[in-house]
Image (cartoon, rainbow, N blue to C red; front, side):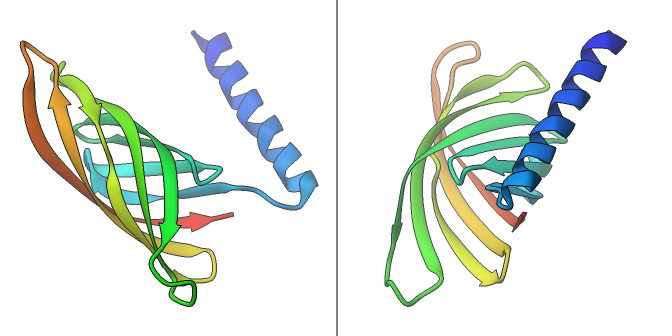
Length: 135
């Protein structure tokens, strides 16, 4: 188990070193209320991983757009999945807005219709609010 953890840590450090050597990175890290209080990691403005007190989720942001080219507010839509620590799991479609309020910082809010697949199919609505810093 310790060897696996060391491999994961080493891979993370090496990938961070490569991104730093290139001079740019599309990595954002922050906090959100998604799976209750959660840590958010977003890569390439496309892949968003969330792990929190209630479970974890992963979203693929498929499309982004702007309401107005001069405004710092954009929209996005994607597809993802979630798992809660009490064994519930399902699919979700994040629909959200993103506000770049300061250099490197952005705030997002989303609604995500969810399909709960644990013990049958159940349609529900979830939501999230978070803040991220881009490196």
